[in-house]
Length: 426
Ligand code: IMP
Image (cartoon, rainbow, N blue to C red; front, side, top):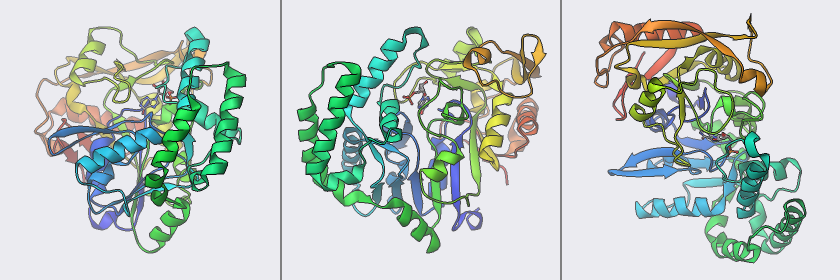
């Protein structure tokens, strides 16, 4: 495996609605790469890791920072909430880890301010029943400013005076749009001024840095955020996040031209979703509850219970295609142990007609009837399995069926919460 992963650019991408369990593979593969970079999303993502017996959740900084010889990059496509960044830098300090010379932040990454979070909440409130169920981290409003060409980029902290002017102007515009919401802009500005000296040394042109490093033979692991079904173009719009969570976003959000291989897709062995929006295989019954409790399906960013359902091969096939997935990590297979029968959605019907692909409209998506196949479950605890052959026959058949339906090889199978609970198929 070592040889396979040298001097390469790899990407890890969620193939469902986020929370597929990317963390374990990211941690394992980090060992094989020189640089770990994020290119999309913001503090809406959450990555839980266990270090020296402590549970740590990173929302912005790549968890590769916990591996002392790795360089980590927050790319131009990420939106950065600075107080969250500072919190995470403080967590690193608690473990004796310094960011200097190991963490770089793109000068072009846009800033999420606290008023973006307030606007996120206001938009959700105004949408009423049509609310997206966002993480309220200000992601949508920050990307809106970026696309409206009024966004403020982190590099602008280099000239605090002009930064302040632009910031105050944007707050003024936001108040015209959203009324006189409760918010102390002077306080936020004072705070930003106080922490700017800590952040400035980390800010560089990361597009140039990543390309130069790659040219010099460094390998790069690009860590996706959110999930392809939340992608603003390819997901269940408008019940989506405000960026491209798929491979396109990773390319534009890093500045690395297409040369990524492997593109590793993360697929949970069943499906979950947080927030609102269509979810054809959702289970509002005892099995759904079983998956939630056994799989610990509560959001790492918001703590919200995740909606749970059967594996949906229609979306898996779609996201394999959209991303050009070269290999899959099937995660949390152990959660399915103990179920008598397991279902997989293999196609969709709408108004009695078979669909060739995913509908574009959310209200059609919500009316879909999934067509299922049913497979035998298995009783055995599989967390000790380290080889595919160690799995019960029914579990092997389930994995093979997903491989067949997605037309993509499954290379890794997650069989439990511990780092070693992983089958690598060579
Ligand atoms: P936003 O990204 O906070 O605007 O939220 C938009 C939708 O994406 C909501 O349904 C969120 O719950 C969902 N979402 C955003 N990021 C993640 C993630 O990392 N995992 C799971 N769901 C997410």
